[in-house]
Length: 187
Image 1: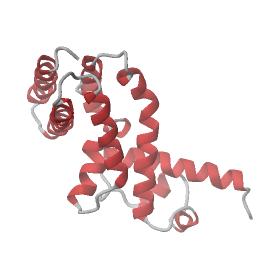
Image 2: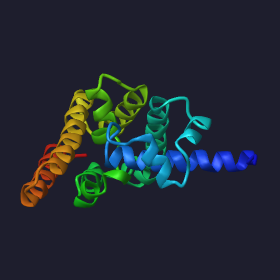
Image 3: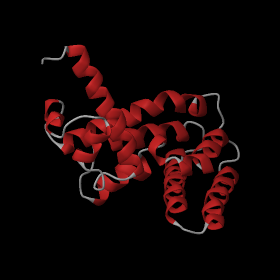
């Protein structure tokens, strides 16, 4: 039985949605194609009607995750929104607890970098975040400060997800958030 193009497009979107969630939650390496497709009620062989390879799916899922977050991030990163609002949102226990819905930098992008599979999409996200943060800072060194802020944000989130001690996890987030706020007070 042949399916309509609309059906194929909807299935493609379902695969992207689920892959973006699983890659952020479980990791690229730990997410197999067969379990991914089975979770959607699809066959493993059907995957290849949508993507040439898992690597292609990873890149498209990363793009999908980035695009999906742009709208929700807009309320925390707009030109009139202070940097503190972004810090409060990014370095929150809610963001820590929901990697499948959050920023792909400490998840998909970090894993791709570790595997030697750097992505231009990651470059784009980093440049975008740096420009946004630097735009909220004053001085000639605003880009350098933005690099420090972004690195601390991503690093603190990664570490907070990695430690077993809940109090330490919460302290990593709150301490980094408050130190960055103090460092960027005028923003």
